[in-house]
Length: 389
Ligand SMILES: Nc1nc2c(ncn2[C@@H]2O[C@H](COP(=O)(O)OP(=O)(O)OP(=O)(O)O)[C@@H](O)[C@H]2O)c(=O)[nH]1
Ligand SMILES: [Mg+2]
Image (cartoon, rainbow, N blue to C red; front, side):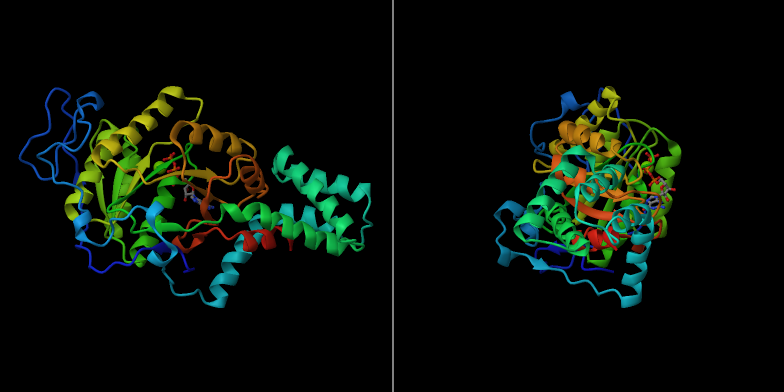
């Protein structure tokens, strides 16, 4: 496993969460939450939710002492970088080689054009085509070409290989701002909502992340917020059962209610991280986008500062459409991070440059396969080296 997250120091051991699948109470539109229950029945309707926690509910538990400060107030000294065991050189090579083979079409297009080339307009034209074909988009392509020409001039580059090295540096500069660690332990629970189009890899990513988080000493609770398909609920439930992670699910009904219930359960149990799965949807399905906004609002009714992370999962093979997805989901939800999956397939990779140039939402993780170790933190230098070697 790579060094993965940042987190605040955690003086207290967290309560153990037993593996279970816990159905939430069914939604009862006319009935308010029963006052006596510790973990409340899910509130019936957004309109009925109180502006703050109702007095009978257990408060969020910052007094647990370990996780109370918001990230904005953290100083660099407050945060420990969690050094996960470093991967063996073979494991890292294997992961990088899968990334490289996934991006091989783009890398061969980008690298062959420099072989034995003269630095002239033809080279720039070919580079422009290769970047556009890699899904980098017009804006990022133009920026890269302009900057590259400037560098060639100011640094008096005379060899094609030097131009390639200059391109590498520019790509790293462009992608570096996307490389950000997910900071753990800044809230308890840390609530993460996961959205994306159908089949992007949301549920699989949640499963992989849950195991990574557990490996970092975090207890995890999942909310099966994909209430459209029974199969989706079961996918998460079976996954949770196998991996000792609790799942809050509901036979049918409102995904916002499931999310709300999960947040309260996590507060009551002292769980570190809640991940809310959601059903896949296209940004053009406005009523479904409204439903996502409602889930977000209702989570905030359960815990005012939540959700702390709103992640969009993107299939790396969707080309320029991925950029449209980032814009639409960001406009609707205010994204805090991205996960790009399936970079082991036929992905072209340039889409990351387009995202960095037009909507630079942090890219926390990239996926290069279906196994748990196939999800790794995004590293701009490794990625660019996979693209240009
Ligand atoms: N090759 C490859 N497959 C992946 C990766 N991530 C997810 N998948 C596969 O993509 C398929 C869809 O994954 P899900 O996690 O069910 O996607 P989802 O976004 O939850 O789908 P819906 O809930 O139907 O919207 C599954 O077969 C996963 O195994 C990846 O990084 N590489
Ligand atoms: Mg799913």
